Amino acid sequence: MVFTVSSLVARPLDPDDFQRFGTVLQAPSCANAGRPINAGTARRFDLVDDLHLHTAGGRAQLALFRARARSFPLALHALECHRLGSQTFVPLGAKRFVIVVAPAGVPPDATALAAFVTDGTQGVTLAPGTWHHALLALDEGDFVVIERAAPETDCVLCTLPAAVEVSVAI
Image: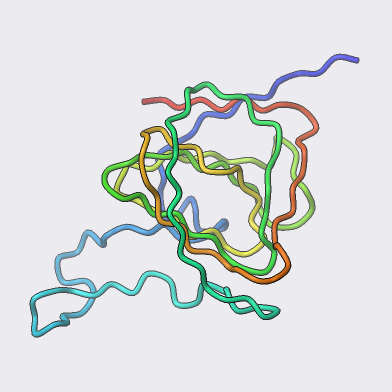
């Protein structure tokens, strides 16, 4: 039996390219975006209206992930998804990461995968059911993670039919 390794190059994270998987979290480029708060000393930007964390008795959980930097190219063998809630990753400081995703639904194969690299100031909220790889930090550091917590774990794992090698063009 011969296995071939598929390859995937992470491209810069763009809100339009990513919208089928979730929401890119970044400061708007328009100076007048958002609305003034705190007597005009700050601006508020509402980024995601519903994180879908309360399905089936779930609740919001805020966690801190301390991630080691990964070396690329990197062979990926498995993905996960959270069918009942979103999952949000926000770097603390200028920390870049790679997000490998596939549309919600049946477990994906290599042809369904997309890879994005953040610029260090961007975060993401993955839509419920989106297949994704665990956090792949390019820069070592801390990440705030918001996800659904409940008595029953909502994490489905799938093994890819063949390894997928992800690289980053930096």
